Length: 85
Image (cartoon, rainbow, N blue to C red):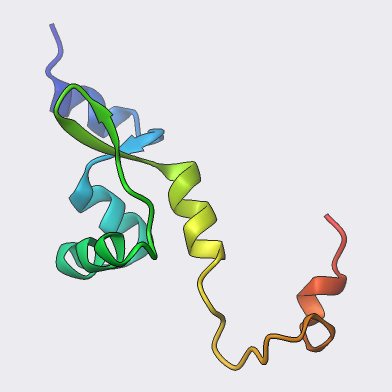
């Protein structure tokens, strides 16, 4: 029987991440990630029994909501606002 770590190394795509993985996913250290969660700037985890798991979709949405350097807050000034999806 394969161990959890052996399977995890072969299966790279995961929907739920533990705190260290969620921080790494966003390019942050664990302490900065924890601070952002406590401030409400990053999502709170989901719970599976007592285990805390972050949904990558929640992380992506929160990351997209972060301010962009140099953004004036006016949609007209943002060339990406004119890109249709």
